[in-house]
Image (tube, rainbow, N blue to C red; front, side, top):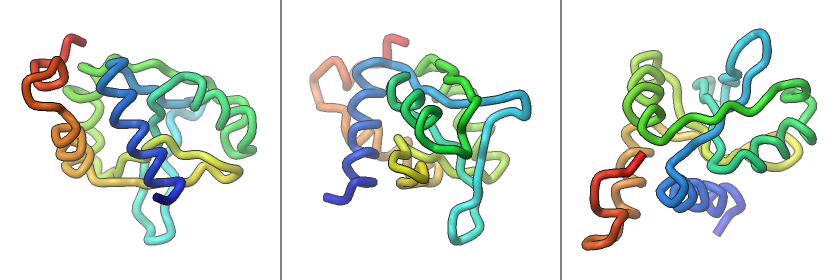
Length: 128
């Protein structure tokens, strides 16, 4: 399993467990850098500590602050708006250049649904 794959998998599991996502922003707003194919992606992390690590270690994110987003807001407001704007979702980007998977909104939602275990609390409506 690649690092990006492991980070994405951790995002889904931690998001489903904790019911929150984290973005980063500065006075200019939320970053949405272009990937090598030219598509823009907004990064999100599943834990505040992951976002803080990027801020501390990646020069492009220096001076930004983490922003906590409730799971319900992320699903109901952020994702539809990002999809409408044609942005992809970056999942737990890591490393010296803050890289990893960036996926279409529909793929993120499908992957979250696939990780809900039938009959478990994860299969019931989200509590957030």
